[in-house]
Length: 137
Image (tube, rainbow, N blue to C red):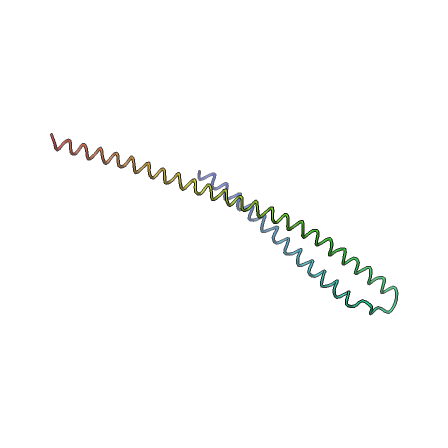
């Protein structure tokens, strides 16, 4: 039972690491998205300050590129969120499995203790019976 419990704890640890990694990836991608949105908003505020058509075209292309990057990051974030939820589900299942094994181990141990007490009580009863029988003779 101990080996199985150790295995389940190892599996749970792996899922914790996987979940943590996914969570860190999600947070870093969210920060990247935030910075892209801030940059896009800054560029959008500066719109119209260009003096020539070439600058306006470059500015428009840059804004479009930022918008595309933002869209791609949002899609990637959605995928990472789904992966994070899957990792969370796997982690919860691994924790349930470990807890089940712990409870089974505790039940087995309590049964073992009960069995030992029963054997010990039988031995004491036998010893008492033998002492009583010797006194009667």
